[in-house]
Image (tube, rainbow, N blue to C red; front, side):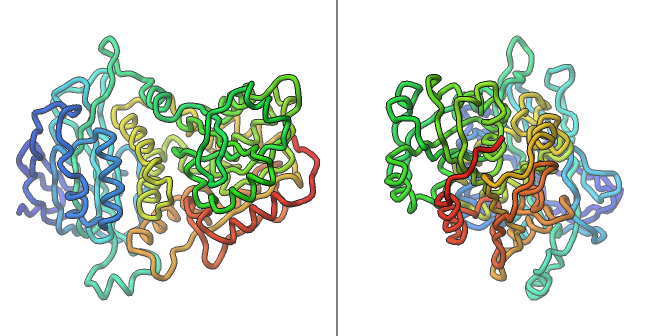
Length: 505
C-alpha cells in the first residue's frame, strides 16, 4: 500500500505513476493482467465479470458489462486500486476529456500502447456504489499518429452525497460517492489506414453490426423476414404499424411490448414493420431517407409509428424528406423522444453520455441492454483515440444542432402526435448505483429528466408542441424502462386505437 498526500507524486509500479491534486489517500501497487505482451486482438478476456465483481459491481451488472467488454475486445491491462481517498465534499464533476483544475483529481500516468494499432482507456468502478465511469487519455494522438511513451489520465476525485441515500450510507459507515475506487486500464485494437487513424471506425462498425434493415414482425413480436420495395408492394398500401428504436439500440428495444403484438398483428393484417438502423454515425434524416426509399413509388403508404428516444426524430424526418409524398402518417406515438435534444449529445458532454448509457443499460437493464452496450463501447474507443468524426447521429440530438433547430422551427402543435414522458426518480428500493447515476445526471441537466432526455423537451421543442403528453409518474421510469411499464403499454394501445386524424407535417 502506498500513501500519498495532496501535491505529491508516487510510483505505483508497472509503469504507473500518480500525482495528487487536492486529494490524499492510499493506493495499491498497480497489478498487470496476464498476457499483456499479446496484442489486444489475441489477448484473453481475463474473465471481466470476475474483476468487475471484485471492484464492487453486482453480479448481474458484472455479467452484462463483462460480456460487452469481451465482445468489444477491450482487454484488461493494468488495475490500480484506490481504497481510501480524502477530498473536500462537493458536487459531481461533469465528465469532460480532462478534470477541471478546481476539482480534486489524480493525474495518472501510464505506459502508452507500444503497438500503433491499439488504444487505451480507463474504466473506473466506485467500490462504494458500483457506479462506472470512463476516462479518456488527455493526449492521445499527434497528427493522427499514436503518441509515444506515456499517456495521462485525469481522474476526478469528486466526493458527494447520493440523493435520498444518505441514511443508508451512514448505516454502512460511508460518506458518499468517491471514497474508494478501482481503475481498470483497458486496451483494444483500432484500425489504421496508410499509417493514419481510421476516422470511419464507428461507421464501419455500425455498417457491420447495425445496418439499415426493415423487417416484418411476427405475432409474438420477434423479427420476421427482411422486406424490400417489392415485398411492401405485395402487402398493400397499409395502414402499417412501424416501430423505430433509439440510440445504440435495435428493434429488441420493444421487447416489453411483445405481449401486445398479436393484437396489432391481427388489427393491421400482418403489416407490422421493425426498422433497424445505425444511430451513431448516421443522421435521423439519412435514416428516414433510407426508409422512404423502401416504400413503393406507385402509391401513398399509410403508417402509424411507435418510436423510442432518437427514433422520434427519425419519424419526424419522414415527413420532411423530398420523397415524403409517398407516406401518409396517421399517428405518431413518441416515447422519450429528444425533440429539444439532450445535453448528453453536446460535444463537451460526450464522456458523460457514454457514462450514462453504460450505467443505464447495465444498472436498469431492459431486454436490449446487452445488445446496446457494445455500441456504447465503440464510441468510447473512438473518443479514446481522438477520432471525433462520424458521430453525426449523436450530434443530431445536440440542442445546438442546426438540423434539429430547423426541424423544431418548422413544426407546430399537431393532434396526430402523442408523447409519453417521465421524470425519473429512484424508487425506495433502488440500488446505490442507481441513485448515484440519478444524482450525477441531475447535476448535469439541472432539470427533470429520464436519465437521458430532459422531461419538458420530450413534448415541447420550439414550435413543435405535443398537447397533453402522458407523463409516467409515481413511480416514474428511466429512459430504458418505459416498455416494461403497464401504464405505458396501455397508453400506446389507446393512442393507436384513436379515430383517424389528419396527417401532420
